[in-house]
Amino acid sequence: MALTAYHSGLAVNELDGQHGIAVTWIGLAEQRLCDAEKLAKDVSANGMAEIDSSSLGFVSALSEVGSLRSAITAALEIVRAKLGSLKRDNDFIYHDKVPEPSDLEPIKDYECKEL
Image (cartoon, rainbow, N blue to C red):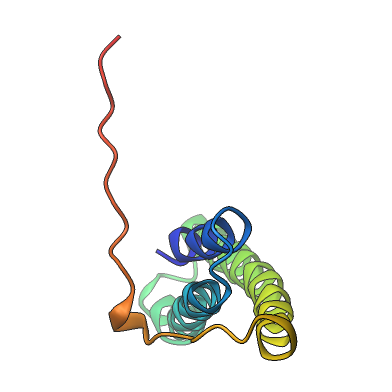
């Protein structure tokens, strides 16, 4: 959901010029990535104790959690940079109202058509 919110924010900003709504979408993406980062930290701190450390599965699982945390951290840096830029632009240039996340329109599902 974080990537969906991020790309929705980019779309409304660049295609529709709705800067306040973009701030909300990107802020929602940041929030969801922070939640994911916290979960990944909890898994690495608590979840690994349940895995038998003598098995190769422990090394593999630990590596996967580390890779996941790295990916989340990298995505969070990108989202935070974009959010800062959008907020600054909206505050100084556009002055669009920034709605609450609950006020955003739900993302529409797209149907795949058979060829």
